[in-house]
Image 1 (cartoon, rainbow, N blue to C red):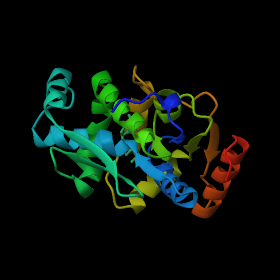
Image 2: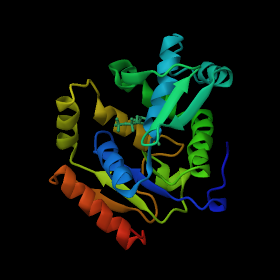
Image 3: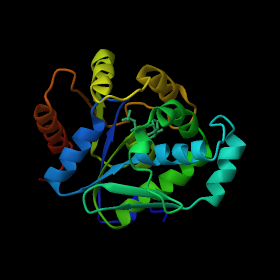
Image 4: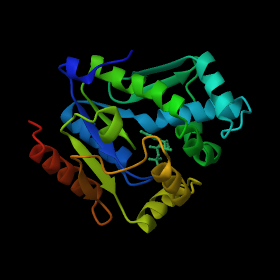
Amino acid sequence: MTQDPSSTPHFAIAIDGPAASGKSTLARLLASRLGLIMVNSGAMYRAITWKILRENIDSHDAPAVIELLGRIEIRCGHDGILSTITIDGIDPGDELRGPDVNANVSAISAIPQVRNKLIDLQRGYLEHSSIVMEGRDIGSVVFPDTPFKIYVDADEEVRAARRGDEGLVDSIAKRDAADSKRATAPLIVAEGATVLDNSHLGIEEGVQAAIEILTRQGLKL
Ligand code: CDP
């Protein structure tokens, strides 16, 4: 379901940023306030990683990963509020956020063939709905022409503490370094994006700040 974003009446709000910066919480609340579908692109990279680990494939063995990609069925949809994903009919659920997936997802997401496949699925969402999509390259690669772009950031200690509070094992500094240094679609502040540092903001303050930014970017509420 490849989609030329310019051919649809729907629009995308791009929320990018490093690990544990609060992108998901912000994207979810924004989507709910604005009546849009929230799409978690990270869950797609995590789902491929989950499948690769289940098949005992080494995440650094790109040819084996690409071979697997050609024989699995990835279905992306939504439940009216949030994006959903199944691989060969299975929803990985909470396993997407497990330590093994955390440790291997950056290697998988650095493979250009993986990105190309998922980008098509990500753009396909606009066929049916307007969306808030969060990730690393949404404003730079997936929807570079959208005027609505926020780069969410927070101090590294704040982000590490947030992930620890969630009870999750996740080397966010390592993941950020890999995501920022990769050759294909590295994490950057996209052209036209406004940076929102929420290190010292509560959740509701962050949502309000994001709505102000989007309004300045031309979003009609
Ligand atoms: O949990 P957190 O918000 O830190 O990460 P995530 O959004 O679930 O993304 C997990 C991993 O997927 C990232 O560390 C990236 O390696 C990759 N990713 C990506 O490359 N591009 C995206 N648009 C989204 C995620």
